[in-house]
Length: 327
Image (tube, rainbow, N blue to C red; front, side, top):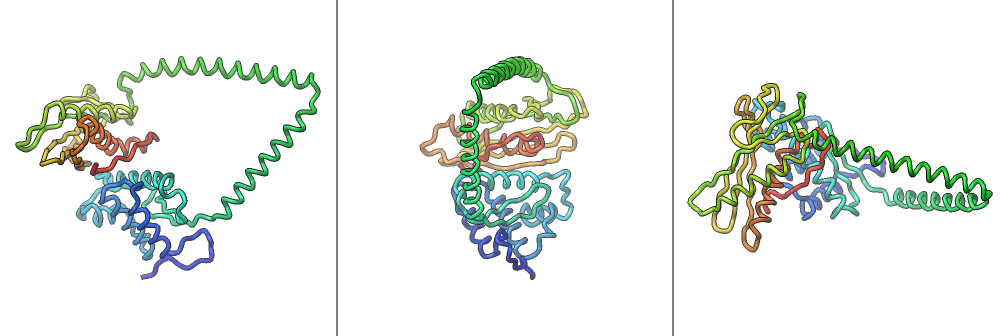
């Protein structure tokens, strides 16, 4: 098999260094992803290094990583797209935290699943710092030249600055009033094809272990709170959405909670009401020893709402926090 071709480009990372960087990322506590999505990253990196990047399509990844069959349809099953969105955000977060000084950058550009490998150039950073210092010196020189402006010109300049600041302040007040008005206007469901309704059903208890009803309600409420942060997701509770517009895409989010020893396991799935297809499902396990129940409910709710909202958030540009699957 033919892998990456050799090159003299100093910005291109060789395969052995890419593999070292991959292991460094996967071993870092700052790289927070479920095991299956971590396997997703390893798969696309190894396939690219081995020269099979052209085969990295949604259907290939779905069959190899998510165990889908040959009838996989990316339009109706967004598992690969959602996992790729989570992976891109996790890589960005890693390189802003534990991987800030790593020599190799691994990224997955949008619009595909082929990773990119780049080497960080120390000299480029030095040149950037030198350029910044030169710019600072230039600003200082300009300030010294301005000190020679006659007093009358300085007075006129100061007056213009004050008038400009006053105009900005007035515009800010007007904008704040408009934003406040629009906030209350958004309290009613917006119209349009891009609105998605998610009906959150109360989570149910499974098994014989005693789980307080407050815990089930707390997890459900945390999910509702998390989903309502996205303006293009309309959240409803109960059996039917509040909108009777059949053209709006509608999904049902339901789940269950099971307590075994000191582990609380929550399973959730998102069902498309149009045909009953399960478009997303996952489970989250929390070790209860030494943890506050309120914190556990909040962590599970954030994790589920972030995963469910990921494809919608990617569409409207709202960041989603990464929450570990096993807490």
